[in-house]
Each structure stands twice: as structure tokens, then as C-alpha cells.
Image: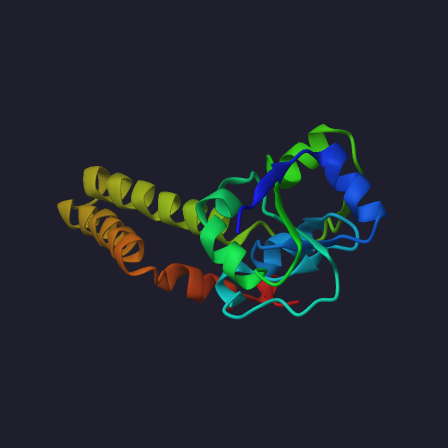
Length: 171
């Protein structure tokens, strides 16, 4: 199956004709801001074929990178649909084109940004402790760095798991 890219203007026309729009971002990203009537089916959950009567399906993410990187996987989940597209530039292109989104400003920062802030803060703290208090403070920075390397290799981020259980991330 050949999945083509479409512009936000083309997507708008297809939506008016009944196309199904699928947002493959994580649920917390989708809750924060989404295109009206889009269905959230995170990429990690797309294991089987999408059940729809729609003759046209359009996938999108934040910037278009995730959809492009997973184009074969998306094609398999929608191989029974006549027309399948990805939104070129994702949600960012949709907004840049001046089209409305539904936003919930009460949502916390995206989990990955929370991880970046926490990891960066711990590394900085370790360096400050290492120079100002004891050389053992550098161990904190090393442990955070090792955790990030492990997360990159394994796909499991313990810090993200911990942060997801924090009260501000419970909704």
C-alpha cells in the first residue's frame, strides 16, 4: 500500500467528506491539544487493523516525524481502507495553517518534558554538589546519565514511570 502525504488544507476537505483522522501520539499529548473529531490511537497500541467503515483514513502526530518513521506499520493497520494518508507536518502544520484545535491548558507538561526537566535538574544538582560539597556528588550525575542511556537502549524509562504516578499526572 502506498501512503501519501497530504496538506492541512487537503485534510480539511477529506474530513468534510467523512475521513477518519487518527492521532498516533501518546494519550497525554492528545489530551493536551488535538484536532476536533480525531481519534487517539497511540502508536504503541496500534497492533491490529483499524476497524472502520470509512473509505479514507488519515494519520497524524505532532510534527509528522512519527507518522513518517512508522509508515509501513500504519499501512498494515489500514490495509483494508481504500485511501490512507499521513498529515504532512502533523498537528504543527495544521495549526500553522490557521486551523483550530481543541486545547486543555489545564494538562501538565508532556511526560517527556517532565523527564528532561527532572534529569537535567538532577545532573545539575550532582555537578553543584560535586564541586561545592563532595566529589561524591558527581555520582548523582553519573547515575542519571546511566539511566538515560539505559532508557535509550531498552525503551524503558524508570523516571518516566515514576513521574507518571505523580499526582499532577493523574487525570
